[in-house]
Length: 495
Image 1 (tube, rainbow, N blue to C red):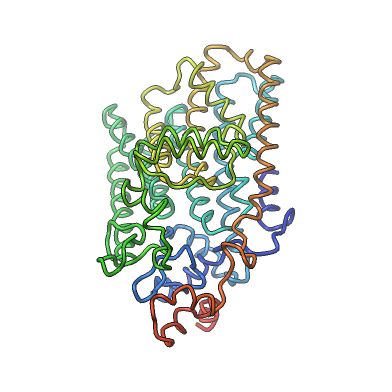
Image 2 (image 1 turned 60 degrees about the vertical axis):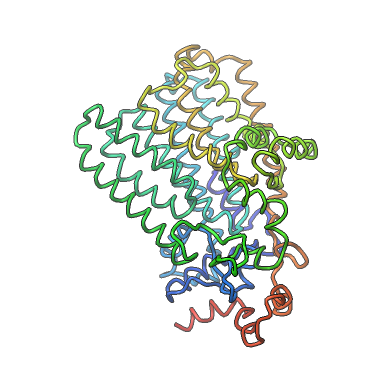
């Protein structure tokens, strides 16, 4: 049922936005351009999300992993006439949520006792409802914006990684069977959300170390193969950076003028805004994309933010961060995890503060905690706070919850699940989460709209010319740069 609800949201059956979401055609165009051996995309297609060379060639910095869906669909449909972005996001959102649900179900089945017992059945149903309705997949499916494409496939890859590592930690899965699949998932992550790959790389290495230390059978061959995959993935990522940005270590355009040595400029800088000298640009330039000082204040915002206190949260966050780590911005919608994922947030807190042992599996749980913990720390230390970034804190929340559940059962027994007070608290938490999620979802459906006059509106030829007039290109060059984006698909059909 959850996958059907996600499909209804993704394909506009429930709410059909009057205008497309920004960038929903970008990966289709990117796919066709790469087939032709090119990395550039039309300026009127990339707009503010582009990164540009001095002569106006537009580059997309987002990962290439979402092209996997295009590879699968291309033999059967015309990508630009099929709702490819919606299908891709829906597919990976359902896959990710399905694996998290499966993880929850298996842990409850093992540690909650008799499956036919009424409280256990009720809790299994409640956890299933929460897994689909109070989870990132719901929001990913509801909007086909460019940003959700790499996040959704990373969400699915991390969900499968969590499932596999949980099997190793709690269910006795041999490490030798886990290493190669995890390495392949790391390939997906490094080409979708690279900071998530950092965590999985660390988790895989830790798995190998623990397996060798324990002298696990048959692990050496799997370890060599997985490390080779990780190495090749890293090399491919560095080479892709070189091809796009002129440097293996550059992951996006620079904030300086191209005359100062930057090969590719960040979009707002290219368009002549004051981004590099005010706001986020200053924080990026002076303090870096990731800074440890931001971790605690960013967590507080991600956990407890709410529209009713948005101004106070902004002021407090600015006061705490600006001097030491720079201040970027806090994007809408402004609902913290406590309000939209109430059930899981409370379950995580119960696991952390009441479970004995706090983490089931002992040392075998370390790779899972390292994988999800490192990714959460990296996201919490980032300069910008966005609602979609909460989705990358989700794996750590679920890991803490699932590893703590056995400790709760060990300490309180299954009678905890039969307690009317606990049951009512959790039902209330799910209702609160669903109602808050519904509020966010309604506004989220129409966010990033390309409606005329808005931030993400499509550009006409004249608007494109005006945006880059300060570069003093020739008219011939302007005709090339401001070409109609549909020419990408027309060229593809003519091949």
